[in-house]
Image (tube, rainbow, N blue to C red; front, side):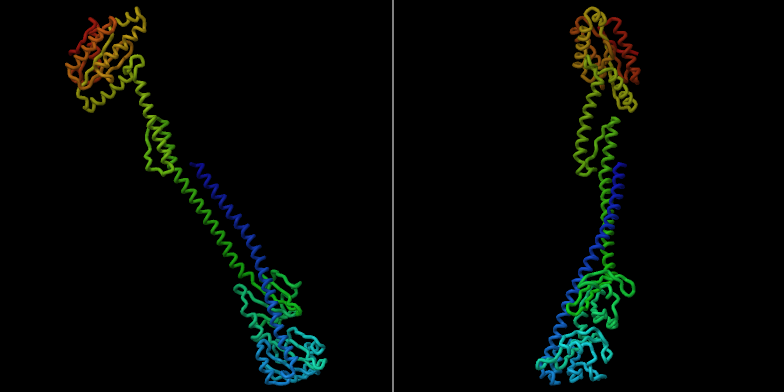
Length: 500
């Protein structure tokens, strides 16, 4: 099973490397794509805000043009005030004559420090027939403003100017964009054509020169730029048509990086956890399969050593039970074959009687039984065929083999198949358990008489001994039966019982 553990180790290393590579590739891919996505999103947002700004300024322009075209509104202060209330984006409406003198004002009017505005750029542009939106400047009331000016045309000539003032640090313009959210700290900023801030959620930034203005090129785009503190920020920008202003949407990278790092590290941790789970699953699987396999290998090794031991299938999973069943079936077959071989090894091939090896094994068992006091009685017959050598010499070995087979059949039929043993040559033994003296002698006489009739002129000499009557040990018992046989051989065709 060492190989499997090496496989698990290699699998763990590969999973770790895979997690690392996946983390690096994913991190790079994720950063690249999120950067591109955020820049694209900010650029689109800047375009949307730019169009909204154009719509709002068109609305203001239309309001100012309406005032410029309606003499009744221009001449009636009350009517001008009511009309001005309709457009909250315009903080002050100023009516100027052709010389720039202030004729009338409506809205958030402060005590004017000047009465003539002919020197202003927006008056100069409007008096020459242009509808004009100024850049950011500081008004006489020391506020940052943008002015929309429209010429008053009367009888085909320009008779004055209507100027609509939007205070940038007030609530009118801010109400358009303060509700716009871009992440946790993203924001909108609007720059005039000189790069000064027209709108910013931080009112203190309005009127200041933007740090990113010099990097803005083209009608729209997106870049990663640094702010005043040197930190990176996603900047999407779009130029406002007809104004040359810029709308910029800014999202600090720190906010995005925090969220992005959470996703990246969650992905990495998830990969690590999955890798660990795979490794643990592999270890569990190997243990689940290696332990039963080890047992099977141990059983096969025991089988190789000649120990036929079945396996309990209930100790194994379902996937192993068929294997165990086949193994146990094989063991059964091997036991049968082994027993057949064992028995064949104990059988004399010529006569079918048990051989000397089986006889010696029996003696060992009998000695153990005597030692355990479990053997009650035992009768032993030792037999020898008379004139067997002469038969072989005169009639040949085939005739001798036939005599041996006939005698074996006589002994088996008389004493039982499992009681007959051939020592070798023409010598036999018959061992009978729990037999009386009379029965033992009767069996010997039957064998002798049948032999006299069936052995073609040969006879049988027999010696008998009895346990425990004649001896208390097996060796002595065999010795006494042999001595009795010796006596029978002197006169032949005789049964002799050992007598002390």
